[in-house]
Amino acid sequence: MPSPSFQALEDILLFDPGKRGIAPLVQRGALESAARQLLEKSVVAVVTGFYIPSAKAPETDGPLGAVHLRDALQANGQSVTLITDDRCHSRLQTLGFSKLIGSHWSELPSELGALVSIERLGRALDGHYYNMRGVDITDRTAPLDELFLQAADAGVLTIGVGDGGNEIGMGNVRGLVSTHISQGERIGSTIPVDHLIVAGVSNWGAWGLVAGISMLAEKNLMPAASKAREDLERLVDAGVVDGVTGRAEPTVDGLDWDVHAEVLDRLTAVVRWACP
Ligand code: MG
Ligand code: MG
Image (cartoon, rainbow, N blue to C red; front, side):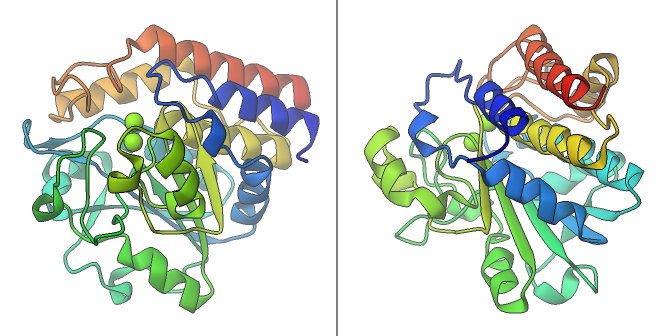
């Protein structure tokens, strides 16, 4: 079992206002293991970007958490590259994202120690990529999940953050996704990772990782709520949309900012309690 403070973080991440039924997927202890091992890696790449075809833009869940994870790791002296695919890149480049052209391992930074996915699709059993509604979006999703299969061969640490069952990392709990998630058998990802972090919203899982890193590094690396809100507005100004509503507005997964601010506040409170 994880330490009490990590259990407290996991409990906060279980909040499931979208009622997706994620609780059975949660792997207790994964957050602590992920944070501990990620802290040891000097070179990290974070992959994100979920393309919403109707809006021709990536969604706000993923990039926001990726930016905050990068900021925290950089403050800790680690080198971090944010990566997305060609389709998502036009809206994310102003926020410092690089794009991969061919999903090739050679495009990643050399000396890579860890590869992190936040809300990025993993292929289903039939090799296709599905959104939560069960729509096949294979022709609009670059196979960046392939990198996570190659990472295992290269001995690179992999971490996946997801909130629905179709993301990279959910291969760890594919059977549970089939049982507990709507259309889980069809959409469930087959791509495994070393450590899977499940949360009600994937950005929250990234914040949970930042909280865990903060506790282990004994310094508060959490984004202030005001900065987090500004970062979300920068994304929206760049044309990034809410993945549920499809609109370019400062919400994530159809949830108003107040909901996200409260989760951020609760995670930060655990950090402050653990390292006053
Ligand atoms: Mg998701
Ligand atoms: Mg989401």
